[in-house]
Image (cartoon, rainbow over all chains, first blue to last red; front, top):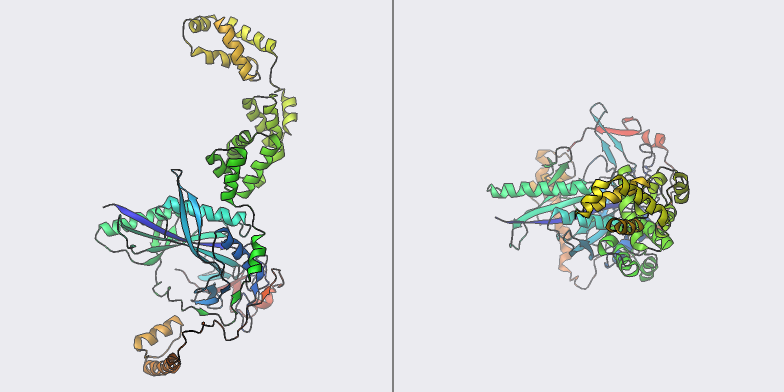
Length: 477
Length: 95
């Protein structure tokens, strides 16, 4: 039987506020345990939550970016469960009336098609603390620094049909929150993570199959692997005549499998009710307009502009707008050197390659956008060839100075003097009479051999176009 | 509305309350009578009335996003039964 996969994601994005959602404690990452857990975060008796305006504005920003309705009135609710990293015995979240209503984002599929994915809602809530299960002589250690950090939970419609679509959607939301500067997107530190709801159904069937929820996946790669594993598992169960159980599962990256979380039969009985400690959140139309005025150019708009304004191919524009920092870098280079396609090729090619290899972000690049445009200017004015430029780039990457300095020091200036190139060609032809005879006898492929020899003789510095032209004349002459 | 024995046991479990077996019928009776009392209100026609989320008809005040709390960990942890390396220690919980 042919099966269809149905996936919905719940993404948790930690909002980049300075203080917590309901208290004035710091949210900075990496502090000593429990030095950022104040009395409110610890759930001490008598304390009251006071909502952070910054977190609300960030939620509005996200809502506007996905064309969603911002609720004029939303309500905070208590989600009740017991776990030691949740000191109050409930998490303050939103249930019936979330701050952000239905919206959508467009994702790019591998075949070049686009697909609209619905976002059901996004709501504000507080994060829990962290449990450390090792090394405490049979006890569990609790660090509550993260407790109370604002989260935006972004819930998608079950619109995705493959693990790849789910990853594309997650990447899109990731790019969006970073463009909006509402989340640092750091997945290793847990600032951006997701739960995946996965089910399968016979192709053509309208009703959804029973779903399993895979919890707390914190990398794009794991999302894809966890979903693919889960889909195979469910198909095996169904084809073996069994039934999929609705349950929560954990992905184990070491084993590459999902497994059932035990003893969670009550976990969905959260008994939500409006939090009596918080009044309804009312958002006025002028607040929404004020936030709208702060929206940056978003990835889709930027991509269209890169295509229209710089004449870039769709693919280049998509790659270059994947992050705001990369797009800014590209634009700085393109503007300075005046040749957008050349800039795109270098940013996506040499530069991205070197960054990947070194495990660096674009913002950490040892070659600045100014430095790169300086190099490209020397290609454009024909001081060096594209090939030599790669050598210069490497030297720049290694801190040997700017393009002009490297070119001078290494003597890489391109040879454009025809007589010098001709002299080199004559010498090569004289040294290779056999090849010359074969070439003239019809073995055209040997042209490349001669080009190589002349380049070698000039240490790669002969202007390639001139070399080709002069060589052709001489060989055919 | 009346709660049966299983309802009471489940509610007690969700609230992590230990109740003794003999008191279950009494809890069931008392809790049911609370629900019945509240159910009296269902006789009123509330169609045109927007549900309230809070008894006060006010909106939430917001605070500026600024760090205002200095955490004195020692004082906070003075009442904890067990701490180590700055962490609160609790009986092992693992899922």
